[in-house]
Each structure stands twice: as structure tokens, then as C-alpha cells.
Image (cartoon, rainbow, N blue to C red; front, side):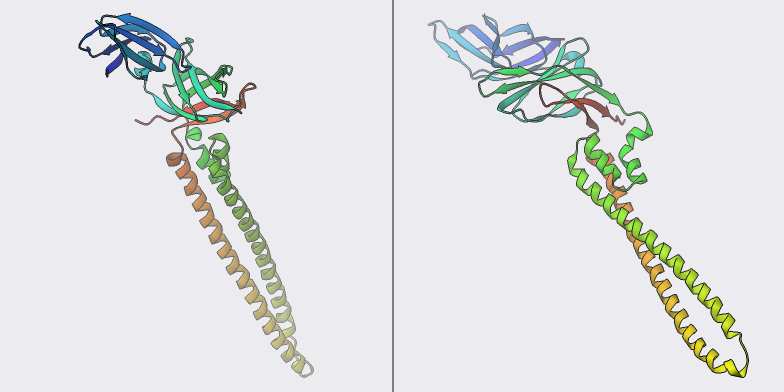
Length: 329
């Protein structure tokens, strides 16, 4: 029945306007917040009103009254209010997540800046939400609605958005995977709250450890076989150097045995060397794959803005966050 728009004239001050309805002599506008509480109600002959609202999401509806006293009321529709001062700064999308509260049916996430001014208020039935904020320090809380319709707020928690500045913080996952295969993936699972990376991080760690230990075992065995071959070859030369008719038959028989034994030792040594090269190739392949995976996670999979858990709130199972963002121009 009615269409109207809203825009911000200055911080916290908004103007609501609607189309003129033929025959209407009076308009009544109602606005309610996320708690379904009517916070503003006014009758006017004009087709607009001005009021102050905190940034957030509201519901609005318009009623018209004609000369006969007949009243027609529109449906409730969404009304979003944003802060003009916040719009002037670059904003980044921030993922926030918390644990489900028992018997809860919906949540409201509120954030305020250092001036104690509410900059975001969003309602959701999920346990995660994505909001847009500029870099800076904020406080946040979550209001929980139970099945009786009552709302329980948590305490205000600190939230800070900072810019990544040094090489280490820009490549913390890749550097860890370079030092120890799989470490970067496991680190990403805990630090950036991405548990899906943990299983493959442990697989990389386990496989690399097994291959590394096996390679060292083969190298050690290869060294022992080389030493054993050299010692036996030296003994064979000494015995082969004996002369005289009486030792001819003994020397001839021993030479056949020595040649056979040396060939056997050389074959075992070559097999160990080949196995070592194969294991090393598999290890290097695994190392390369997990390093590429770490690069993909660091620079492509993870959101540029990532939340790290610091501690849990005592009232509600939500989290404190430190947000780090990398800005590229």
C-alpha cells in the first residue's frame, strides 16, 4: 500500500519519507526494535518524519486515516539505519561465531565504539553472523532470547580490528608449514577457528614423521652396509695375497666365496640406497603438497579478516576476538 525510503542526514539522525496517499488526512508511523518493542509512534499530516535512531535494524509500518475515520495499515517492513561516520571509513566484513545457548531461539549482536555509541545491532537465529566494521576498537555483546520470549544479555566483550603489518603475521601459516609439515594447518585450525584444516594437518605431520624416520633408518643401514662391504673387501685382498702351492686350492675357494659375498653386500647396499631415494622423493613430494596447501589457506581460503579465540565469557558461551586484517591497494 505504501512505499517509502530512509537515509541518514547526520549521525544517528534519520529521515523517513513515504508517498502521499490520495484521501489520507493523517498518517501514523510506528517503529519497533529487534525486541519487537515499539520505540517510536507519531501521527503527522506530512509525508515524512525526522527522528534519532541508533544504527541497527528496525521494523516500521504506516497507517493512513481518511476523512471518514477509516484506518488502513501497512505490513511491518525492515528499516536499516547506518552510522554516517562509520560509512566514511573503509569497512571490512567480520565473521563472528558463538556456541548455541540451550533453549535459545534467537540472538541479537550489538557492537559499540569507544564513545559508547551503538554502531551495529543485528538479529539472527543462527550462531554466527557477518558484520561490516572499520578498523578500530569496539565492544560487543550478545542478547539471547529463550523460548519464553525473554532476552538475556551477556557482558560487554572487547573486539579489536587491527591491520597486519609485518611479514610474519602475513605468512604465519606458511612459515610454520615450512618449518614443520602440517604445523601450519593445525595452527590455522586453532588460531583462525577453521577446524576443517586440523585433520589434514595431522595427516601431513604423521606421514612426514614416518617418512623422515624411515629415511634416516635407511641412511643408517646404507652406511653400515658400505662399511661392512669395505671391511670385507680389505680382508679378501689380504687373503688373496697369500702365495704358495699349499694355499692354492684354499685361496681359490675363498676367492669364489668372497666374490659372492661382496656382490651380495653390494646388492643390499644398492637396494638400501634406492629405497632411501624413493622415500626421500615421497617426503619431498609430501612437503611440497602441504606447503602449497598452507599457501592456499593463507592467501586464498581464509577471509582477509580472521578471528582468533582468546577466552570464553562466563555468562554465555561466546568468544573474545582479536581481529587482524590485511589491506591491499
